[in-house]
Length: 76
Image (cartoon, rainbow, N blue to C red; front, side, top):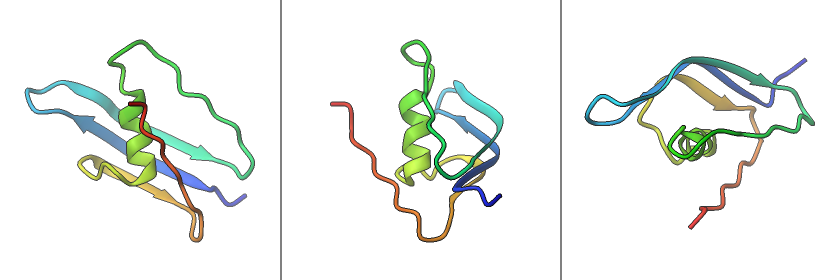
């Protein structure tokens, strides 16, 4: 299968040292339905911003399949 989105070794930390993600590995198959659950401050919006290409300040790799369009609607 060709994955539509891949994360390899993704880590994200904010100024002050708060680590939000550490070494995440995810791959999504075409047609997959995903949900992102967690308490306030867990990094759900940060994860989605990375996936949408709005946040590029992370280590590791994250990319969408060629030709895939990703939309992101701010929660505010």
